Length: 268
Image 1 (cartoon, rainbow, N blue to C red):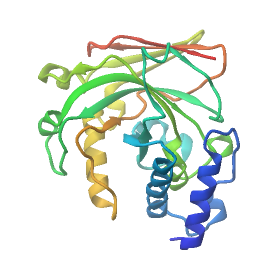
Image 2 (cartoon, rainbow, N blue to C red; image 1 turned 180 degrees about the vertical axis):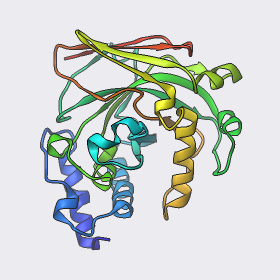
Image 3 (cartoon, rainbow, N blue to C red; image 1 turned 30 degrees about the vertical axis):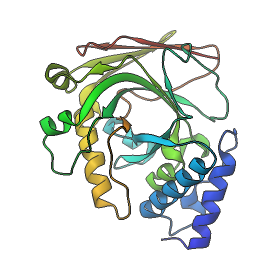
């Protein structure tokens, strides 16, 4: 665990970095005792500072739910952080475009977004978790790293906004019984020019509802973490490899077997 003064220095640094293209050395390199509990305490304080500046939390993001990419980052478990009214956007309202600014080494991730109608509890079955969700939607999360070359520990990533930059939420569909079943078995294709990546729902801890289960249990396990509540949106992790993005590219995500419309995003 790091000292209160070290924690405050990290919070201040993260607030200064917001919206810039600056990168820094990982906290784990600068503070030998820095751990995941420190990271989540910092995440809560950054959330409060952002709220004071006019950006309110509207839900959570789960990162690194796709076990196939853990080895690339030296990660051995998922992480989470907050998403904000200033970082979440309706896909159609966005004009299907993103101005790539203030997000160094940005990457794109096709994800499933869930909206909570009621608060889930630890120990709920998948069916009970599904009853807490009123709608699901496809989405693109834009992630980025304030640490050069995406080299960090899980604690670094959890503290640094959970690597969250933007979330584009596609067409919302009621989470019927049939669609809840489809969430564990659909597939996705992410494409741009000559790049193609394929993924499946099971890549995110077995499915988006299982990713939600992880988050509910993790928040209950960690001291001082606020449980999920009604009205929150949860983005459940990338279904494919997270791909680097650059201006003048166009990315498309097509979802098969779950009844979601495709997403197409132009990078400006």
